[in-house]
Length: 492
Ligand code: AMP
Ligand code: MG
Image (cartoon, rainbow, N blue to C red; front, side):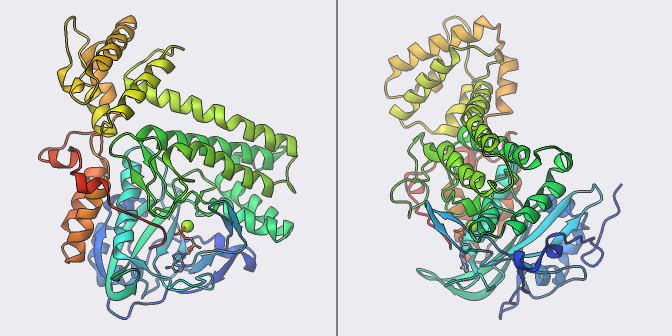
């Protein structure tokens, strides 16, 4: 068994802090004026750091992760980057309200950035106050773990810390910090800044660093930068396919929010769709729908093209282009595989494309709840004469559903699918519980009244989204109408 560590005995190995000075600004968190208090801690996050769960009960825990205390080994810094925001290049961004406290190396040899968001101003804060409001910290905290529970690569959450300090947005709100963790917070935008500043020597240092730390099998490869890019393309394609299959939209897919590791990064106005709507826009400020749900695969390519551009000084253009050219095929392949599993199909058949498209058009036409439908599809009976009434009731045009159901049934029988066994398989890929906007909103409103119980309840629930959980049916139900129209926008 791994020996448990305390805050003071966690092992740090701060590789980013050792990079050339221009990569970051060394800056400490700014303490809140009102004392920080622990709102929620994620036991799975403690485990990733080998931290003794009892550590979370110490006042120092809220102190460290609320930005008022440092422990030995931490070397706080704000990372420098730039990026394309809504298609426009912004020459300098950087961590404006997040501070990398240090990199923990756990007993399993994994490296976890401790990234404290809402930590106060840094040299990159521009016009911002360096803070996060409680509302957005809760949303990020819960969604990290919900995505992880769904098997989608993501930053992880360690804890949420609150303070009575006021933060001014459209209304006066209170501040909070969230600690998120990832093997790295390097973004596409980290490459962009050195490319556009024509600092190719730094660009190379960055690429070598990322390869050395996170793609070690490429260290000595020939054309390692092109191969590295090809792997980023593949990881991004897989990630996007997973978002599309689960019905999740990021909301702000700027290149500074794209992880070089292909993990979901920076949760702002994201959303799981309720009713199936391919044009779903979760970000209230995204007036043109640049980051609409059905645009994400294309935006992935757009962002990868920006990254490819930055690697031109290091890798042959043809190879970068070849990797880019493989992206769409890769997204399609992964997406098809995921959807096949959601349909409970084992064999790969060309005609399944049509079966899926017909279903999707039915779902759009009747605005069926995406998650509930897929979960219920597991109950489909292929027995002769079965009418599958419960599923049928979701649709306005039931005759069309019947036609589809007949084709689906024939397709299942053609691979000797057995209902019981298929249902078990489908329940492992069609989640019962997702972080619906209105559920997060419920936790937020309670938290604003200082009742934090709903955060913990949702955290535990969403970490196991595929298992039936006793007494939790409320959380699997369709949202009330008001819950479908909550507006969420950028940078809160
Ligand atoms: P985001 O939309 O959260 O990805 O943020 C885009 C950029 O704005 C990043 O460089 C953030 O660090 C910065 N930023 C967002 N909100 C704030 C804030 N309240 N204070 C300072 N910088 C911020
Ligand atoms: Mg960001």
